Image (cartoon, rainbow, N blue to C red; front, top):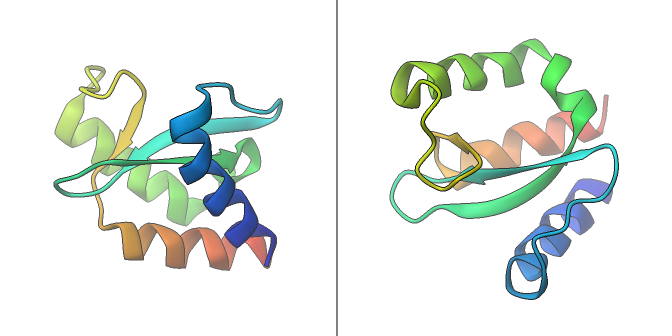
Length: 88
């Protein structure tokens, strides 16, 4: 359940602020319309998340059009992955 609070907070934070809590990272996710999510830094060490990072590197290199880390996957896939990671 914590991941849903984080994701909901990150979506509402998009309107209110660009601040990211300590120990977290803002990423932009989506195939067409990018949405901003705030995730714990610990997710970066997980092999499944590292696979997404490799895809981001292949697609964008070090140029991310949103100004932050952009993950090129569907929002549903990202939410499924982060929900799984929150339970581990």
